[in-house]
Length: 395
Image (cartoon, rainbow, N blue to C red; front, top):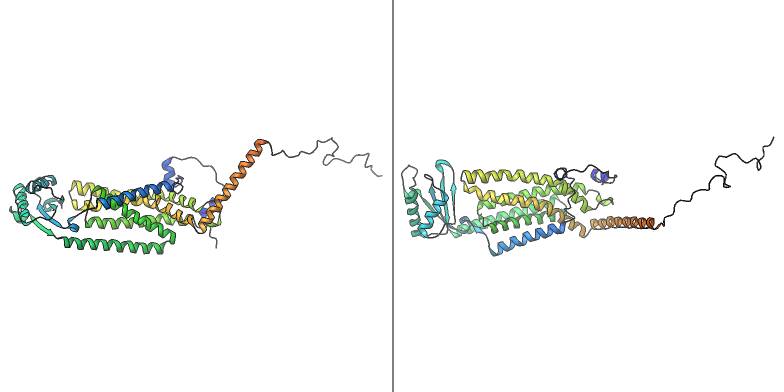
């Protein structure tokens, strides 16, 4: 059975000059010829800068942990009239002299309420802020009567927050390990290494952006991050499947290198990755606009933000980080490295031969072919009858 593929067989045919197309058409058809692998150093520098900035922010600034992780006090105020998060935050700040950590609207309609998350408050501080909120908004309980008891206050201890943190870390580690096992089984060794590196790249950069912007880390954000890692895995599978198809049998030919075939695969899947990302983030943007800003369901904000950031970073890493890294690993040692050297040496020799030939033509070193003597100069004309002087006809 032959190891060649239809893609490689087509590449051995003469390449005809086709009509030139626009940028977006070339992007859509995968014929753009964008030098993704050829400019891998640039993308390595960009990727390294993103990782470095993310790690510095995580190490120096840290994360803004929600009270589910860090512990604190949660105050729930039923919505009434034209209450807004700004008004609730102002009442809290005037009562205690400092602003709460977050204030967000939960739910919609008659069942909506405002949730205040703050640092741990003493019993006296809780009474003070509860009285201030009641005097400002006069919330009603389930029976419809105004009551201070309608404002619920819950304590979340640091111990409970520590348990939640450990569970989140365990869930993240288990997910990453299972993903690494699947990648190791699904792909060959070098593709597995590149995919796992892309996975950690996405994890670090997404976490770093959260740290830089100061997004609050909540259980919803952790769930969103796990979802994003699943998307990155899917995108890597799509891209590497195409790389595997294009490079099948490449070692038996000398027209293209492994890196050039991988670059072709990246171009062919580039538009698909862009489309997948756009389709994926449109519902997330809709969630942010409709659920958070219009309906005021603030609990969805953390989930939407981490998915939005992670999907954009994942689309970049699968094309501009994972594929170049795979080629770099392949070309460092093994049969691909030898094949690449052979193809490049053949091209170099051919180029040098063309240069020598062109130089010889310019110098007149290549002589014109020797033409035969003109007829009548002593040489017999082809097909001529023998001369009568030398060959007399016998009777």
